[in-house]
Amino acid sequence: METKIHIALVTVPVYSHLRSILEFTKRLVHLNQNIHVTCINPTFSSSICNNVKSLFETLPSNINYMFLPPINLEDLPKDIHPALKVEATLHRSIPSIYDALDTLHSSSKLVAVISDGLINEVLRLTKKLDILAYSYFPSTTMLLSLCLHSSSLDKTISSANKDLLEPLEIPGCIPIHGTDLPDPMLDRSSEAYKIFLEANDRFYLADGIMVNSFLALEETTIRALQEKEDEGIPSIYPIGPFVQNVSCDNGSDLEYFCGTLFSEQILELAFGLELSGQNFLWVLRPPNKHGVIDDLDSGEYEDDILYNFLPNEFLERTSYKPVLRTG
Image 1 (spheres, rainbow, N blue to C red):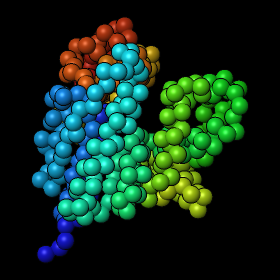
Image 2 (cartoon, one colour):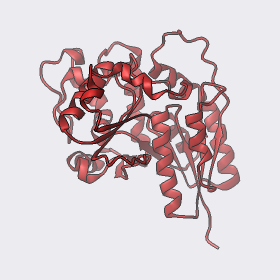
Image 3 (cartoon, rainbow, N blue to C red):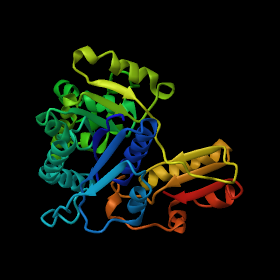
Image 4 (cartoon, rainbow, N blue to C red):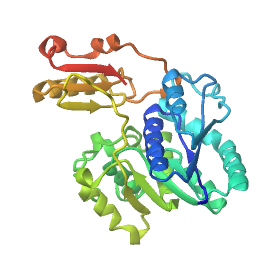
């Protein structure tokens, strides 16, 4: 009888991240039936929405899960940026995560811990337990490269990132205009920017980073990072794509999945899909003023709500082509 391989998985309370890392986990245990996974899930709400419940209720038997006690966030401002709310939840969950990992390791000898890229503090905890530590990065390798080089960029740039006259040169990436950088990088004096840099520095504690991408999509960026391993960058493993299959019976030529966007981004995407001339399946969420969403604290959405944010007469012009669903 082969020995069971026990791995711990630490997630974050963001639905899009959670769905991606669970799809990866299901693939992992399918490839090797001796692998058993325990998912540790920080939360900031005592109630879990139906979308999240369904993710865990459909997991195979060799994936167990636990929800940590909800974190009290009543001291935070009511209008706090969702990203900072998630960060506060994760930071305050660290003691509970450590206790859970220590208990699991004592009872079943964990082989490795895989944590979402948003909760890199787990990498430090894992090193204390002398266990292999991996980070799962659910986004693109281009964004990962930006994260890994953010501290070096900070040391070489003197002006505000959003005011840069020349595009930024990042290894393996196309040049990026300062105004196109992620929100936390736009204001270098903000607390969000400080947290962003500190979190990215912790990537270097990982024994490896598994990114939800693949060579055919981002070969230049992936190769550029892999070639810098002798400079301290962790091993990069392109293991994607991991997406949840959506059945569609209308013969769509194009499937487009996206998270929560600004209203302006939804309009731009809508025009692009229309001009493509293709049948399409579009899965998206209602717009959010921050471009992100409190996924585990949100309710369910009706499809009709999205029609309020689409271009005028979009449905009439594409009525024979699209299938539009809330994700």
